[in-house]
Length: 80
Image (cartoon, rainbow, N blue to C red; front, side):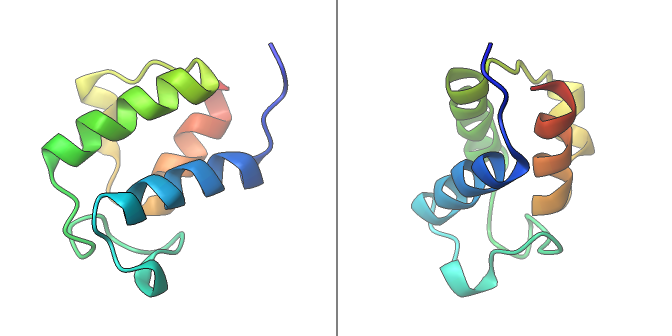
């Protein structure tokens, strides 16, 4: 499997969050997902995108641990 950089992972996650309706100016590593109006349905969709793009499967428990954009990026980078 190809090596994925944290920049690639950050771009996919950031672009996905923006497509879900988050304000692009507010999306950064420290941004709380709840503050971006990202709900559980968005997170389920994000999990699918992550699996398709990086081959990383996230369980419900994994997703429950994610509270910031940075948490999501770090989790995927750790497993990619």
